[in-house]
Length: 131
Image (tube, rainbow, N blue to C red):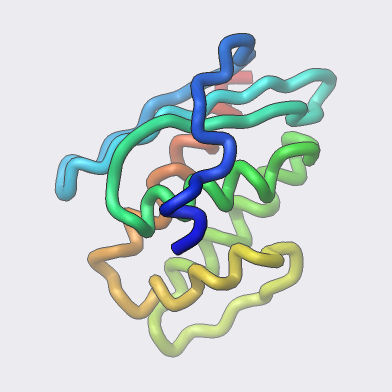
């Protein structure tokens, strides 16, 4: 809830080298992801958008988890997060590398909310694929 009330990195990154927009037509959540990448290193990341508490918290936590990582490292975190969220209520996942993101693991029990948690992540992936 803290990430929803006080989202980290919530701003437009003026010198973004890559960006992407994501929108969930089912609930109206939207997010813009901004990346500054230098020599395969994510030196800065930010987001703007509106949506439910899960969507905003996930985006905030995502920015904290990938800042300072390599592009390859961010993709690994994406994969681990995606597996955790989409595993289903009885599925197991490897929490290695997820750190604080593991707090969102309970979202997998609510299929309707999975898109809320993954919107910013899929938008991140689209921005990374612009390279």
